[in-house]
Image (cartoon, rainbow, N blue to C red; front, side, top):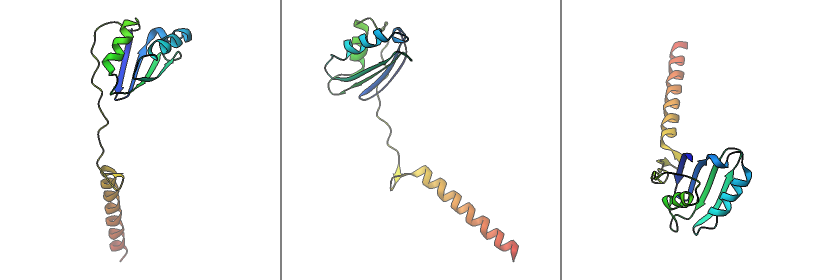
Length: 123
């Protein structure tokens, strides 16, 4: 049974309780799933029960990988996974995120105003 699932294109992480504290089960899952076309790497961690699957999105999709895990008996149920989404592009100027640039400008302006007030008080 799995309790956690996360996916972005080309990478999926799923918790499989049967793998936790069972190194032989982790190796078995790696060998079973690693033979599928489009799957480039399977790493099952027996310490955490987490399974990392790297795959080629054009050759295989997340729901197909979950289907294979179901067929092998590693997960149960017919829950459809959320669609993998690409990371949102971040608006940047010269490689610096716009929000950071705005924050820098606000601090610079506030500091300049502070210095001007200090100069007026000292005169």
